[in-house]
Length: 345
Image 1: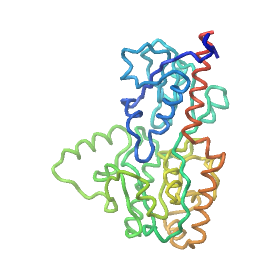
Image 2 (image 1 turned 180 degrees about the vertical axis):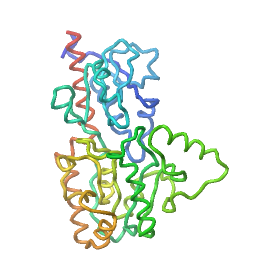
Image 3 (image 1 turned 120 degrees about the horizontal axis):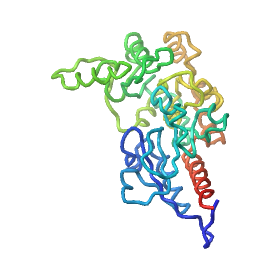
Image 4 (image 1 turned 135 degrees about the horizontal axis):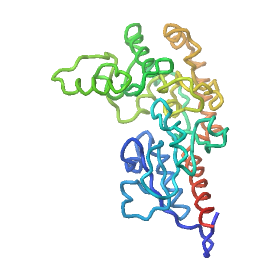
Protein backbone atom coordinates (compact mmCIF):
# COMPACT_ATOMS: atom_id res chain seq x y z
CA UNK A 1 0.00 0.00 0.00
CA UNK A 2 1.30 3.46 -0.89
CA UNK A 3 2.40 5.71 1.99
CA UNK A 4 2.46 9.50 1.98
CA UNK A 5 5.76 11.29 2.72
CA UNK A 6 4.38 12.11 6.17
CA UNK A 7 4.01 8.40 6.81
CA UNK A 8 0.20 8.57 6.78
CA UNK A 9 -2.09 6.66 4.50
CA UNK A 10 -3.18 8.62 1.42
CA UNK A 11 -6.57 10.29 1.80
CA UNK A 12 -9.09 8.56 -0.45
CA UNK A 13 -12.66 9.78 -0.81
CA UNK A 14 -15.25 7.35 -2.11
CA UNK A 15 -18.98 7.11 -2.61
CA UNK A 16 -21.52 4.42 -1.83
CA UNK A 17 -24.11 3.72 -4.53
CA UNK A 18 -27.19 1.55 -3.95
CA UNK A 19 -29.01 -0.30 -6.71
CA UNK A 20 -32.32 0.04 -4.90
CA UNK A 21 -32.46 3.77 -4.19
CA UNK A 22 -30.75 6.44 -2.12
CA UNK A 23 -27.56 5.36 -0.36
CA UNK A 24 -27.93 8.30 2.02
CA UNK A 25 -30.49 6.26 3.97
CA UNK A 26 -27.65 3.93 4.98
CA UNK A 27 -25.89 6.77 6.79
CA UNK A 28 -28.95 8.20 8.52
CA UNK A 29 -29.99 7.97 12.13
CA UNK A 30 -29.27 4.59 13.72
CA UNK A 31 -32.19 2.24 13.26
CA UNK A 32 -33.75 0.78 16.41
CA UNK A 33 -32.76 -2.70 15.25
CA UNK A 34 -29.31 -1.65 14.01
CA UNK A 35 -29.97 -2.28 10.32
CA UNK A 36 -27.61 0.51 9.24
CA UNK A 37 -24.87 -0.20 11.80
CA UNK A 38 -22.64 -1.93 9.24
CA UNK A 39 -22.80 1.04 6.86
CA UNK A 40 -21.98 3.51 9.61
CA UNK A 41 -19.10 1.24 10.66
CA UNK A 42 -17.87 1.16 7.06
CA UNK A 43 -17.89 4.95 6.80
CA UNK A 44 -16.17 5.28 10.18
CA UNK A 45 -13.46 2.81 9.14
CA UNK A 46 -12.67 4.84 6.02
CA UNK A 47 -12.49 7.99 8.12
CA UNK A 48 -10.21 6.28 10.63
CA UNK A 49 -7.88 5.47 7.71
CA UNK A 50 -7.76 9.13 6.69
CA UNK A 51 -10.38 8.96 3.95
CA UNK A 52 -14.14 9.24 3.74
CA UNK A 53 -17.18 7.50 2.31
CA UNK A 54 -20.14 9.56 1.09
CA UNK A 55 -23.53 8.63 -0.27
CA UNK A 56 -23.34 8.93 -4.05
CA UNK A 57 -26.14 11.50 -4.16
CA UNK A 58 -24.20 13.69 -1.70
CA UNK A 59 -20.94 13.46 -3.68
CA UNK A 60 -21.78 15.36 -6.86
CA UNK A 61 -19.13 18.02 -6.24
CA UNK A 62 -16.55 15.70 -4.68
CA UNK A 63 -13.43 14.46 -6.47
CA UNK A 64 -13.95 10.75 -6.00
CA UNK A 65 -11.16 8.19 -5.84
CA UNK A 66 -13.46 5.14 -5.85
CA UNK A 67 -17.07 4.00 -5.69
CA UNK A 68 -18.62 1.06 -3.86
CA UNK A 69 -21.82 -0.40 -5.26
CA UNK A 70 -24.31 -2.18 -3.04
CA UNK A 71 -25.42 -4.85 -5.53
CA UNK A 72 -24.12 -4.76 -9.09
CA UNK A 73 -25.34 -1.95 -11.33
CA UNK A 74 -24.11 0.30 -14.12
CA UNK A 75 -21.01 2.42 -13.53
CA UNK A 76 -21.42 6.18 -13.78
CA UNK A 77 -17.96 7.32 -12.62
CA UNK A 78 -14.56 6.80 -14.22
CA UNK A 79 -12.84 5.67 -11.02
CA UNK A 80 -12.07 2.23 -9.56
CA UNK A 81 -15.29 0.50 -8.54
CA UNK A 82 -16.00 -2.19 -5.97
CA UNK A 83 -19.20 -4.07 -5.23
CA UNK A 84 -20.86 -5.60 -2.17
CA UNK A 85 -23.15 -8.41 -3.33
CA UNK A 86 -25.83 -8.11 -0.68
CA UNK A 87 -28.70 -9.86 -2.48
CA UNK A 88 -29.08 -13.23 -4.13
CA UNK A 89 -29.58 -13.77 -7.85
CA UNK A 90 -33.30 -14.31 -7.23
CA UNK A 91 -33.71 -10.79 -5.86
CA UNK A 92 -31.05 -9.03 -7.97
CA UNK A 93 -30.00 -11.06 -11.06
CA UNK A 94 -27.08 -8.74 -12.02
CA UNK A 95 -25.21 -10.03 -8.95
CA UNK A 96 -24.39 -13.20 -10.88
CA UNK A 97 -23.94 -11.58 -14.31
CA UNK A 98 -20.25 -12.12 -15.09
CA UNK A 99 -20.18 -9.31 -17.66
CA UNK A 100 -21.46 -6.95 -14.99
CA UNK A 101 -19.05 -8.22 -12.33
CA UNK A 102 -16.00 -7.75 -14.57
CA UNK A 103 -16.28 -3.97 -14.23
CA UNK A 104 -15.23 -4.13 -10.57
CA UNK A 105 -11.75 -4.04 -9.04
CA UNK A 106 -13.00 -5.96 -6.05
CA UNK A 107 -16.05 -8.07 -5.19
CA UNK A 108 -17.23 -8.61 -1.61
CA UNK A 109 -19.61 -11.53 -1.27
CA UNK A 110 -21.21 -14.14 0.96
CA UNK A 111 -21.25 -16.58 -1.99
CA UNK A 112 -18.76 -19.41 -1.24
CA UNK A 113 -18.44 -20.33 -4.92
CA UNK A 114 -17.12 -16.90 -5.92
CA UNK A 115 -14.71 -16.90 -2.98
CA UNK A 116 -13.45 -20.41 -3.77
CA UNK A 117 -12.80 -19.43 -7.39
CA UNK A 118 -10.77 -16.42 -6.29
CA UNK A 119 -13.27 -13.99 -7.79
CA UNK A 120 -14.56 -12.49 -4.55
CA UNK A 121 -13.47 -11.59 -1.02
CA UNK A 122 -15.58 -13.27 1.64
CA UNK A 123 -17.84 -11.20 3.85
CA UNK A 124 -20.84 -12.21 5.88
CA UNK A 125 -23.91 -10.00 5.91
CA UNK A 126 -23.19 -8.12 9.12
CA UNK A 127 -25.62 -7.72 12.01
CA UNK A 128 -25.51 -6.15 15.48
CA UNK A 129 -24.38 -8.77 17.98
CA UNK A 130 -25.89 -8.52 21.44
CA UNK A 131 -25.26 -10.59 24.53
CA UNK A 132 -28.37 -12.76 24.29
CA UNK A 133 -30.87 -13.47 27.07
CA UNK A 134 -31.49 -16.50 29.29
CA UNK A 135 -34.86 -16.04 30.99
CA UNK A 136 -37.01 -19.08 30.24
CA UNK A 137 -40.74 -18.83 29.70
CA UNK A 138 -41.92 -16.51 32.47
CA UNK A 139 -41.70 -13.21 30.56
CA UNK A 140 -42.65 -14.74 27.20
CA UNK A 141 -46.43 -15.21 27.04
CA UNK A 142 -46.54 -15.41 23.23
CA UNK A 143 -45.63 -18.79 21.77
CA UNK A 144 -44.71 -17.86 18.20
CA UNK A 145 -44.34 -14.74 16.05
CA UNK A 146 -43.31 -13.83 12.54
CA UNK A 147 -41.87 -10.41 11.70
CA UNK A 148 -41.65 -9.90 7.95
CA UNK A 149 -43.07 -7.84 5.11
CA UNK A 150 -45.59 -9.06 2.57
CA UNK A 151 -43.20 -9.46 -0.35
CA UNK A 152 -42.54 -11.80 -3.26
CA UNK A 153 -39.69 -12.76 -5.55
CA UNK A 154 -39.40 -10.63 -8.70
CA UNK A 155 -39.08 -13.88 -10.67
CA UNK A 156 -41.07 -17.13 -10.74
CA UNK A 157 -39.00 -19.68 -8.79
CA UNK A 158 -41.44 -21.82 -6.78
CA UNK A 159 -38.83 -24.50 -6.01
CA UNK A 160 -36.82 -22.13 -3.81
CA UNK A 161 -39.36 -19.42 -2.91
CA UNK A 162 -39.72 -18.95 0.86
CA UNK A 163 -41.93 -15.88 0.59
CA UNK A 164 -44.69 -18.29 -0.45
CA UNK A 165 -43.72 -20.61 2.39
CA UNK A 166 -44.15 -17.77 4.87
CA UNK A 167 -47.74 -17.37 3.70
CA UNK A 168 -48.35 -21.12 4.04
CA UNK A 169 -47.03 -20.99 7.61
CA UNK A 170 -49.22 -18.01 8.47
CA UNK A 171 -52.31 -19.71 7.08
CA UNK A 172 -51.64 -22.92 9.01
CA UNK A 173 -51.26 -21.18 12.35
CA UNK A 174 -54.23 -18.88 11.73
CA UNK A 175 -56.38 -21.96 11.15
CA UNK A 176 -55.01 -24.40 13.73
CA UNK A 177 -53.43 -22.31 16.52
CA UNK A 178 -54.66 -18.70 16.20
CA UNK A 179 -54.06 -17.82 19.86
CA UNK A 180 -50.47 -19.05 19.71
CA UNK A 181 -49.36 -17.01 16.70
CA UNK A 182 -48.94 -13.31 15.90
CA UNK A 183 -47.83 -11.65 12.65
CA UNK A 184 -46.06 -8.28 12.39
CA UNK A 185 -44.70 -6.27 9.47
CA UNK A 186 -45.56 -4.17 6.46
CA UNK A 187 -48.34 -4.67 3.90
CA UNK A 188 -50.24 -7.58 5.43
CA UNK A 189 -53.41 -5.53 4.98
CA UNK A 190 -53.12 -6.53 1.31
CA UNK A 191 -53.42 -9.87 -0.46
CA UNK A 192 -50.43 -12.25 -0.48
CA UNK A 193 -48.05 -10.60 -2.91
CA UNK A 194 -47.65 -12.46 -6.18
CA UNK A 195 -44.21 -13.23 -7.66
CA UNK A 196 -43.03 -11.29 -10.72
CA UNK A 197 -43.91 -7.61 -11.36
CA UNK A 198 -47.60 -8.58 -11.35
CA UNK A 199 -47.48 -8.53 -7.55
CA UNK A 200 -46.65 -4.83 -7.49
CA UNK A 201 -49.48 -4.06 -9.88
CA UNK A 202 -52.05 -5.90 -7.76
CA UNK A 203 -50.88 -4.24 -4.55
CA UNK A 204 -50.94 -0.86 -6.26
CA UNK A 205 -54.60 -1.36 -7.14
CA UNK A 206 -55.44 -2.56 -3.63
CA UNK A 207 -53.75 0.50 -2.13
CA UNK A 208 -56.18 2.92 -3.81
CA UNK A 209 -59.34 0.93 -3.13
CA UNK A 210 -61.73 2.64 -0.67
CA UNK A 211 -62.02 -0.55 1.39
CA UNK A 212 -59.62 -3.13 2.79
CA UNK A 213 -60.25 -6.81 3.35
CA UNK A 214 -58.79 -8.55 6.38
CA UNK A 215 -56.43 -10.80 4.49
CA UNK A 216 -54.44 -11.95 7.54
CA UNK A 217 -56.35 -12.10 10.86
CA UNK A 218 -53.12 -12.75 12.78
CA UNK A 219 -51.58 -9.44 11.65
CA UNK A 220 -50.95 -7.07 14.56
CA UNK A 221 -49.52 -4.19 12.52
CA UNK A 222 -46.17 -2.49 11.95
CA UNK A 223 -43.74 -2.19 14.86
CA UNK A 224 -40.92 0.32 15.51
CA UNK A 225 -38.59 -2.32 16.97
CA UNK A 226 -38.41 -6.05 16.34
CA UNK A 227 -36.69 -6.66 19.65
CA UNK A 228 -39.63 -5.46 21.72
CA UNK A 229 -41.84 -8.11 20.13
CA UNK A 230 -39.24 -10.88 20.08
CA UNK A 231 -38.32 -10.49 23.74
CA UNK A 232 -41.90 -11.35 24.74
CA UNK A 233 -42.20 -14.40 22.48
CA UNK A 234 -40.61 -17.82 22.88
CA UNK A 235 -40.13 -18.67 19.22
CA UNK A 236 -40.14 -16.91 15.85
CA UNK A 237 -40.41 -18.09 12.26
CA UNK A 238 -37.23 -16.84 10.59
CA UNK A 239 -37.37 -17.69 6.90
CA UNK A 240 -35.01 -16.19 4.35
CA UNK A 241 -36.54 -15.15 1.02
CA UNK A 242 -35.20 -18.28 -0.71
CA UNK A 243 -33.92 -21.66 0.41
CA UNK A 244 -30.99 -23.76 -0.72
CA UNK A 245 -28.33 -21.06 -1.11
CA UNK A 246 -25.00 -21.40 0.66
CA UNK A 247 -23.77 -18.58 2.89
CA UNK A 248 -26.89 -16.41 2.55
CA UNK A 249 -27.73 -15.58 6.18
CA UNK A 250 -29.55 -12.30 6.82
CA UNK A 251 -30.52 -10.37 9.93
CA UNK A 252 -33.59 -12.45 10.81
CA UNK A 253 -31.91 -15.14 12.87
CA UNK A 254 -29.75 -12.57 14.67
CA UNK A 255 -32.74 -10.40 15.56
CA UNK A 256 -34.13 -13.43 17.38
CA UNK A 257 -30.82 -14.34 19.01
CA UNK A 258 -30.26 -10.90 20.51
CA UNK A 259 -33.74 -10.90 22.05
CA UNK A 260 -33.36 -14.33 23.64
CA UNK A 261 -35.94 -15.68 21.19
CA UNK A 262 -35.36 -19.16 19.74
CA UNK A 263 -35.72 -19.02 15.94
CA UNK A 264 -37.32 -21.60 13.70
CA UNK A 265 -34.97 -21.15 10.75
CA UNK A 266 -35.22 -22.01 7.06
CA UNK A 267 -32.91 -20.65 4.40
CA UNK A 268 -29.19 -21.21 3.99
CA UNK A 269 -28.37 -24.79 3.01
CA UNK A 270 -25.15 -24.70 5.04
CA UNK A 271 -26.44 -22.81 8.07
CA UNK A 272 -24.64 -25.12 10.52
CA UNK A 273 -21.29 -24.26 8.92
CA UNK A 274 -21.82 -20.79 10.40
CA UNK A 275 -24.11 -21.22 13.41
CA UNK A 276 -24.22 -24.24 15.77
CA UNK A 277 -27.29 -26.46 15.38
CA UNK A 278 -28.18 -26.17 19.07
CA UNK A 279 -28.89 -22.43 18.66
CA UNK A 280 -31.99 -22.76 16.49
CA UNK A 281 -34.79 -25.07 15.40
CA UNK A 282 -34.27 -26.31 11.84
CA UNK A 283 -37.59 -26.15 9.99
CA UNK A 284 -36.31 -28.79 7.56
CA UNK A 285 -36.44 -31.37 10.36
CA UNK A 286 -40.26 -31.32 10.45
CA UNK A 287 -42.59 -32.91 7.93
CA UNK A 288 -45.31 -30.32 8.36
CA UNK A 289 -46.50 -27.50 10.60
CA UNK A 290 -48.47 -29.85 12.82
CA UNK A 291 -45.22 -31.62 13.73
CA UNK A 292 -43.51 -28.30 14.35
CA UNK A 293 -46.36 -27.04 16.53
CA UNK A 294 -46.29 -30.19 18.66
CA UNK A 295 -42.56 -29.77 19.15
CA UNK A 296 -42.88 -26.14 20.23
CA UNK A 297 -45.80 -26.67 22.60
CA UNK A 298 -44.30 -29.75 24.25
CA UNK A 299 -40.83 -28.30 24.85
CA UNK A 300 -39.88 -28.30 28.56
CA UNK A 301 -38.62 -25.00 29.89
CA UNK A 302 -35.29 -26.64 30.72
CA UNK A 303 -34.79 -27.46 27.03
CA UNK A 304 -35.76 -23.94 26.05
CA UNK A 305 -33.16 -22.51 28.42
CA UNK A 306 -30.55 -24.79 26.84
CA UNK A 307 -31.32 -23.17 23.48
CA UNK A 308 -31.01 -19.71 25.01
CA UNK A 309 -27.69 -20.55 26.66
CA UNK A 310 -26.31 -21.97 23.41
CA UNK A 311 -27.29 -18.73 21.67
CA UNK A 312 -25.50 -16.66 24.32
CA UNK A 313 -22.39 -18.81 23.99
CA UNK A 314 -22.42 -18.40 20.22
CA UNK A 315 -22.86 -14.62 20.29
CA UNK A 316 -19.62 -14.16 22.25
CA UNK A 317 -17.66 -16.77 20.27
CA UNK A 318 -15.14 -16.15 17.48
CA UNK A 319 -17.59 -17.81 15.06
CA UNK A 320 -20.06 -14.97 15.57
CA UNK A 321 -17.48 -12.24 15.00
CA UNK A 322 -17.47 -12.90 11.25
CA UNK A 323 -21.01 -11.43 11.27
CA UNK A 324 -19.95 -8.27 13.12
CA UNK A 325 -20.05 -4.78 11.63
CA UNK A 326 -16.39 -4.36 12.59
CA UNK A 327 -15.19 -7.34 10.52
CA UNK A 328 -17.45 -6.29 7.64
CA UNK A 329 -15.97 -2.79 7.65
CA UNK A 330 -12.30 -3.65 8.14
CA UNK A 331 -12.39 -6.34 5.44
CA UNK A 332 -13.81 -3.95 2.86
CA UNK A 333 -11.65 -0.96 3.81
CA UNK A 334 -8.49 -3.05 3.80
CA UNK A 335 -9.15 -4.45 0.33
CA UNK A 336 -10.19 -1.08 -1.15
CA UNK A 337 -7.20 0.83 0.24
CA UNK A 338 -4.80 -1.93 -0.73
CA UNK A 339 -6.11 -1.85 -4.31
CA UNK A 340 -5.94 1.94 -4.48
CA UNK A 341 -2.49 1.88 -2.91
CA UNK A 342 -1.16 -0.43 -5.62
CA UNK A 343 -2.61 1.91 -8.23
CA UNK A 344 -0.90 4.92 -6.58
CA UNK A 345 2.55 3.28 -6.40
